[in-house]
Amino acid sequence: MNIVFFGSDSFGIPALERLNSISNLLIITEHDKPAGRGRKIFPLPPKIYALKNNVNFLETNNCNEDTIIEKINNFKPDFFVVASFGQLLKEVILSLPKYLPLNIHPSLLPKYRGAAPIRRAIMNGENETGISIIKMEKKLDAGGIILQKKVQIDDDTIYTDLFKTLSISGAELLLKAIYSIIKDNYKMKIQDDSCATYAEKITRADYTLNANRDSKSVLRQINAFSERPGTRFKLGGQYFKIIRAIHSNVSLPKNTIGAIKKHLYLGTKTNSLEILKIQPSGKSVMDSKAFLNGYSIDHNIKLEEE
Image 1: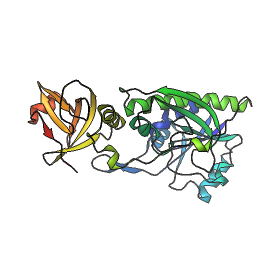
Image 2: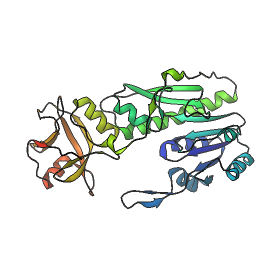
Image 3: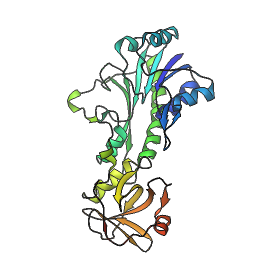
Image 4: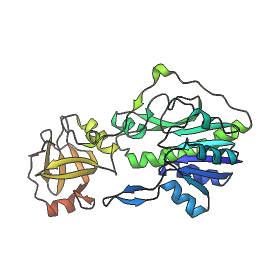
């Protein structure tokens, strides 16, 4: 079985591991990109996987180019699998697989179509999200649903943990979908476009702290950007990032930060939050006790506006 995998980040790596054990793979990914503080150029995770596991791969910033389409067609694909790939596939390329072009999408479609479904689900206070295996169509994330699996979200759920859970669940569900399609033992549910919602791309405003809201909303914002890139705020002319926090009963005015007995707290519109991990600009992540050893924080310091 020949499978072409399209991906740009680590979300699809568990799927790649499963697919590599059952098929002949061709990986399509994008060219190396800058990352980290120094903005050095690094290969993307699918390319790293391909090099470590001797899997054929192609790098392109336009998968719809004639040369790329020709190479994919010559591979004689049975399936496409798309997982967190930053490009839209045109109809001419979607028609190439013998069976179906499949997409692993980390939401319960038709909710949260688009670029940032995991973070948006946490930010919006959802109690559950999930994985959808869909047939790819020209319209973004709108294809027929083959399989879905629900995953719970609570006030302790952080982005990096949910990302990992969904990526592993997606890999497991993908194999079930592939085998059911080969056996012609599956049903496809058409999405109801009237129920569709969209997970817009993340902007700096999304991870800039807004502590004028209730504690649950503020904690959900922090969780959505934990452990990267962190939820940023400004204090004393310097930027900091909150990496982890939990609910607390300590009383603090909203939009303030304060230290009590070597513990660091953030005031919101309702209850306060205890900050467990924080990152000063240009420095490593540290726990609140280590932070307070190096920074003098009074009881109620009002956060500065951007």
